[in-house]
Length: 526
Image (cartoon, rainbow, N blue to C red):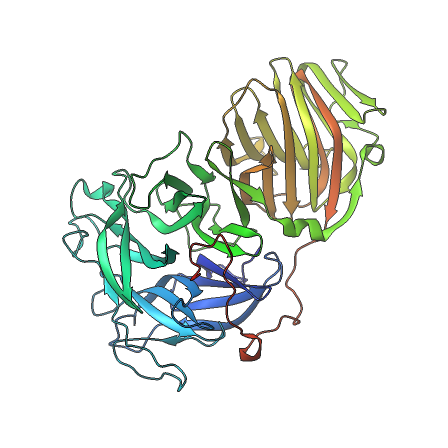
């Protein structure tokens, strides 16, 4: 996880990550000022170190002298060993109402130089054409703000290559229809190095005000378009068998649940990843944002996309506890209608509560862990997981699993400490997600809790991904209510606490080499 700001005065915004030579390079916005693009590096995608900032707003009078918004970094397909950063800028002259796309270049991912229509301050070895910032133009897109909108949307560039042709996606708006439904994914084609022709919209669903931070990813011959929707703070996707469309969506097209925003696709040596920032309050996105660990993007057999836990967590497991080490199992409440049975020959726990709620807690106390097990529900009652539980007060996290309807809901549930309050509970709904249930009642689940990050997966696909600081340590277990629940061979891995890494990451020109495109990367020049 990453958030380099200690106070609430600054926080991170939209992110972009490029993997090169064994190092992840994170570029991100800084809110609320938007005055520079920050840069951090990591060896594993979990622990990060800030290094020198990439670019800043320009001098007064320039087209990007007011704010910098979302960027995208990719290998320069026209010159090996160089990278390009397409970024969004706005100016004081336009009162921030006109968004444009600019360009910066680097030979080492560290030192960046803007390429403007005024060819100035460029190093001697950078010989390239001037770049005139791209802007929204009619008739395909709005060229002035709608009567009830503050600006012209033309931002969040994403460069990709398909069949040896280069394209630039943008978050744009069509000039027709209800003003709150004009959000579209714009597209421009690269006709010559650093020269683009604006084309009609790639996709206009007719439903949203904006489709922010668009991306394209390809599995086989199928294209997937990923974008973030401001209204519900979720990351969604569409698919097509031809890049020109039509773009369709599945019955459930949410990649990550609410609070996860500005999803950005990148590639490492194992395939595609999805990065984003997380905010607990979608109405306030300029305070206490953080970047969760990335998720591996996979294609399901039926064509749908899914998220999986990144493999880097396997490398920071300190110890693994099996069922004999989890005993004895403690009951959260003592009443005769509940029981726990351990079957050592198959390492199963059978938890039952015939009437009312009962929690079953493993013996050890955990702070950072990953819990894995197969579960099976019997009866038509309720079940879920408990973690970071204080058995004396019952305070902690309650993860409700409706296995019949396919609903996962996480709550922070404790008691208030104010004397005389009529509200006994301190109760907060943190996140919910849904899946399509089948006739089977057998599921593999995984609960990952590291520092303040919480991730829940069902059948190896991530459903919940969030951060919360309410509880930091406690017991782990499960609960049932008027039902029975079998935990088959549960294991708990103790995970290292995430922290900032040491200064052993190589950076600078001597470590910069020509990029090696990954085989499935649509941004590859090969």
